[in-house]
Image (cartoon, rainbow over all chains, first blue to last red; front, top):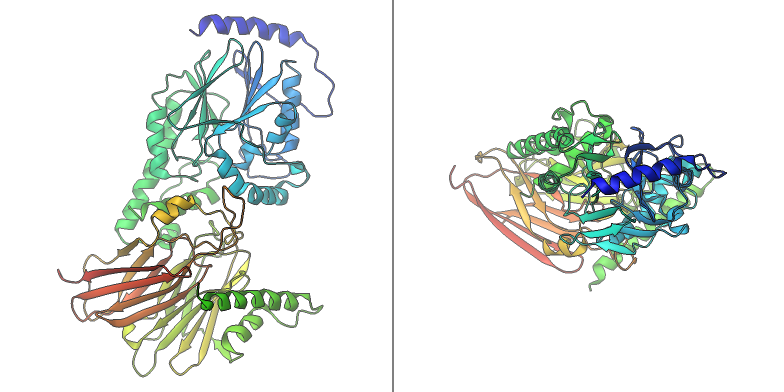
Length: 310
Length: 270
């Protein structure tokens, strides 16, 4: 199923590489080819800052014979314009689809740039509600954290939705993608993309690698979704944060250990009658995750608030 | 529905107006605390509370919508001298008075803990009111922002499905004749009136707990006046001095007139 399509795309890629880049005011974002016709931009492991323009998440571009799909729009219009320039440096094919893996600002703030060039916006059935609820708050925060890069950021309508239990397909021309919406895990609107031709799973923030996972949905929910994810017959995964490509399902291991140990430690504390401040003052180990200083206490707080009702 | 909540709203507005005028004078003659002291304590003198109460609050909160703070009473509750009330104020919040906790000499200890929303960098303060009406305050500066307008964490249907559900966390074994710490959770969305509805894009009207009455064998233990600065699903840690087994009863009501009642039999196995 995968071999013919892949070979075709390898040929295509060769021809694309010969095309001269178009002139553009934007600086093309660096992309790494991790499989034929599948490019990933690596987000930096930093907090939001003017210097990174919100570019902290991994972003992916999928090239089909007829069209292009972008998975996540970047943390600002400025970053999205550079991603667009990087795509245009490689192909003239239309960018028909922008797939948003969830509502967090590092994934959605550049969406308007792709909508302006004609992309249809895809997301979890709950994404639009989540964005309406939070976009204004996020935008205000991003203005403060990023400065000019955020100018022009707008909320986009989610034109194509994916419901839990009802995966949908997009065909880019010899390149079928399967979109799956998940129950509440990292957030309440997580979506994954499976590139069937290359057996690559684009996990969005259902998978963090190296950068500490952030719980903004449900801790037990996330662990349950990870069990389901592990059954996807992928060869590799693109995490929402982490390396551009990692072996599957081994890449799930560190995140599973962190979340399981966090759940166990918080449940133990609740059972022992320890208060949240007492637990925060003497927290379970954060491991060697990057950016744990703020995120670990936040995760403990989120876990405590959820698990104390068990 | 009733006029009482409306008059409380008016207090909020006047706080905002007062604070704006306080801030707009060229030389800041009046601090936010001066405004609050005038508003809530009729300008009565409020002494330094060191040695009377302590306040524990994080210097920097990781979740501005859920900041757990504890007030520790350093005086024992005796009929001769006791803490009649603890007022918990967040100076720079839109609704600065998060809660007032009213005790009886039988409460055993006026130490409490709860979770608050913090809207911007602000002093958080506890004001202890003794039985003779004297006032003492301590404060801690808390760095956090956005806690009052932060999106509700659950959708409204889910929030209302669980509304009023309570949970009591108690020691494994109740100790008779001494203060026992109990932790009460009451599920309530605590809409602040500063959050936006996911579907209609309208402001969600304020909807929050207004009073919580806790009794032990029909004797008052604690009565709480609550407001929007208490976090979603309010948590109240308090003390109880049981002489033997008995019935703890919690009755809570919100500004929409809902009433939630739950009782627990405690100490029977002790």
